[in-house]
Image (cartoon, rainbow, N blue to C red):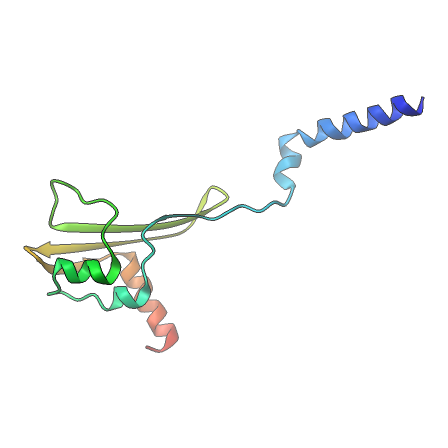
Length: 121
């Protein structure tokens, strides 16, 4: 009798553990997933118009993808995901006129400026 009761208890516990609502409530570590090129705030702030491609590449690295038909623009994207949800996302676009930086835009530039303000730089 005790064996049957014990088996029934374990079977019930085992089946309830398989219910998705119960599984979602269990605390477990969700590893952050980093995609793209991490951009250093000081390096982003030191970017200036008039720099060459080589200087940009030495400062923040090569872009992840270089489009074949759009050689005048480099795009850097950075994203952190935790638990399947995007927690942090930044992008940086650098436009070239020939071999020289003509324009710099993106949320990474704004983020770097905010960080510099907070640090008092």
